[in-house]
Image (spheres, rainbow, N blue to C red):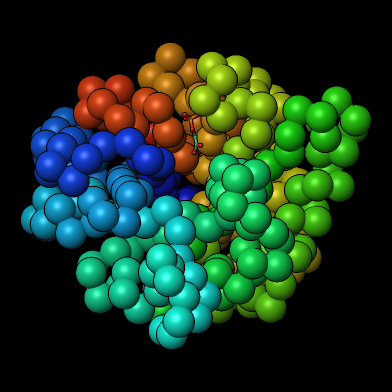
Length: 253
Ligand code: PGA
């Protein structure tokens, strides 16, 4: 049994001064759901406030990116050591917005993921196809490439520090959601490719989240799928009540 994991991806929303109230609202609304991991991945500048607000609650703090070098002349970047020192537990890597706007490639995803796991943090590695790729019948090809290149060099020993998020790019922030069947099909493929990379037994333990317009109204049917072990939530994670409703749906599974 894989423990469900619901993670918020705040993106470039929520001020440092608004962070504690949102985290505390989530913690309050989800008290007692011990069968779900709850994570808030926040902008870097919100991290100190998020870590402080998470203390003594079941909510765990996360980041949205990390550099692969341990230190050095990389103006504007943040290392995994800095994140760990600040109290972060999870780091999103390779989100499609980073791939689309900030030059993230499968190669840099691999370097960042390796650094995150080496630092003892858990990487939430995002994969997913664009609408053009889906329409061209290239879903499998894109997912297999992103997985094989992005996770190169990982082994079964890394499985407990790895979460995969399947986020079809056409479903992110658009209100369009993959159907549960469409999502399950890709999740099953992801688990199969993981099996090729780190072994079938280890692949069975890795949580695979769905992301892309997941909300209270569709969370239950997505989470009912065999290989959907949680969600990576953008818009619906910015309000405690909608995020808590998704967590409740996961807790009921
Ligand atoms: P969304 O974003 O829930 O707003 O579609 C998900 C994500 O980008 O992680």
